[in-house]
Picture 1 (tube, rainbow, N blue to C red):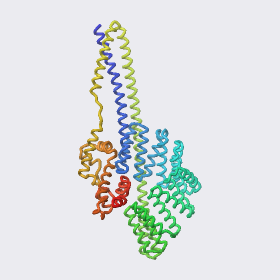
Picture 2: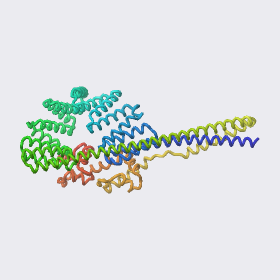
Picture 3: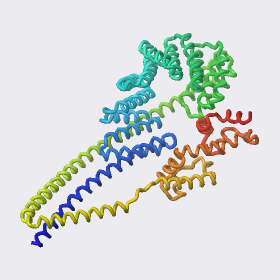
Picture 4: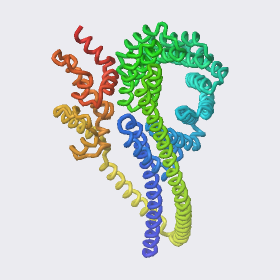
Length: 567
């Protein structure tokens, strides 16, 4: 009888081991799935954060996230990865590739269920189409975005879409539709006292009226847009409107009052220091003096614009500059210079065509390669899915077999061991108490872990190393450099700044560089330094990044900061 009881107990133990194995196996699969999903989300976050600092790294992170999300077959992660890839390629000016990713994101079930996500995809797709001059496709995309915005009852997004549609219908010469959308936008933003969007609406009205030949009405709208932008503190917006206004007047050979406009434009541009705007203003000055037949000044300003656009590598604007020089030399009968400008015009035109063609071929090649990769992935997914079905079915049959065998064995032995029921219950009670004691000892041995003290310590070490050695003065300083110096990985470095500083690495370094710049700006002995030289001293790559970061962190331009400290 004792031998039978021992055999029964052994079989029950085997049953418990089998059930425990299956539970642990299922829990492990679930845990791994959650960890993999979290890793994908980290990659997507990293890609978005790196867009403004390192596009190549952002592109790698986005594609890695896409590959992993496809492997996980997580529709929501796949949709977000497609969206992030679209965003990265937009900032790389690869609008066809970007559009392809947005269309793939829209095709996911996640986009069908998530109205806000779908609206954002359609809106970004419309922007890409507009940049590629595919206006009809852009209109369709914006209308789809508008449809989703209406479903969400998002009034702001709806009327912002009206502004975009007004401009697009203007470009496609559907002036009635354009005016209808702009009227709706203007009524809403005037009622909401939304100054910035009201200014944008007036600006688009101006473009509409210029296309219709209603110059006086356009000038009134441009004037109102300028006033609203200035009231909203949008100096750049006001400046762009005034440049549009000047361009429209020059297109119609009107020069009356333009000197005053140029003076106001120069005053506003002095606070921005934008190279593109500088070149554009200089070019318009060349056009102005050409109309006034002051050929000496016209040539001087046109050549200055030529130098600016060459330095900025802007071939389209450079071609426009050469067209003005061709006209100038024709009017002055300077055959040699005319022919030289004509040759340069043809060369730039060919360069633009070749560049655009090469870019499109490269983008289409990328799309083709992505499609090939997607096709291979779909084939592999099918094969893996079939294998998964076989494995799951095998595990199910195995589970049923062992469960049925165990139940039959249990019932059989239970009948034979009725006389030993009391003994068996005592054994089970002892076993349960032992298991409970084991669980309790294991629980007492486990303590929660917190990564925060480690990351705070790492942050203090990073802060001391960077500030003491002034590593931030190196314009090429990166998270990779720091991770190599401290013999740790880049994610820990980024986490340390997030925990200790409350922001990312780039923000931390730019704050130190800005503080260093403040010391220079308040030092009278450094008055002779240009902003470019100051930017170089404190570790910024160029004066434009320096001025933008300084304004963002202090609320003042370097000029205003220096003046306020002198006053």
